[in-house]
Length: 179
Image 1: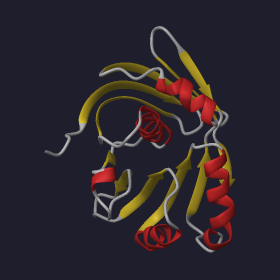
Image 2 (image 1 turned 30 degrees about the horizontal axis):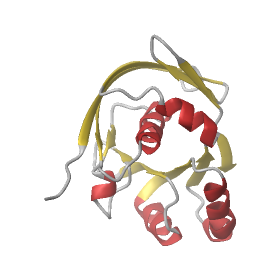
Image 3 (image 1 turned 90 degrees about the vertical axis):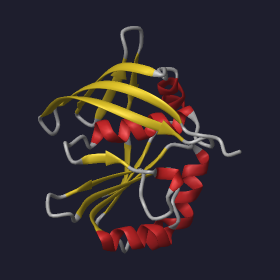
């Protein structure tokens, strides 16, 4: 019998001073049985960083032809394609042809550095690609916020992010690998 996804609910208040975006979102995250708390929280953080009424979680790990999040225009074009982890270069080339902007968010420390070393030359040709790297210890701290029902506040200012609940706040500094 196949394992089912675990459903998490998150109420997130986002104050993004860099983009002047101030909204509250009620989100449902389905965590695939093979997904870790860290990866799920990076997906949630990705939503916070690029929050928009049109941004949506996809089937993620359950679908080969979809990113973790994407944003469609009102006419149906893919405006933003967001991948979490270390996707294949071929997959990113395909996404680059389909979307106006492609974002990759890595978070696995040395493994992410190795992925970048192996793929950066090929990815340099993709002009609409942006790669952000997150510190693995910051992501471990972020994963401590995981609850089946989360009430979170997220503030983005000057390229730094603070996300927390009533008990704890985690500071993150995403590093831009490529513009």
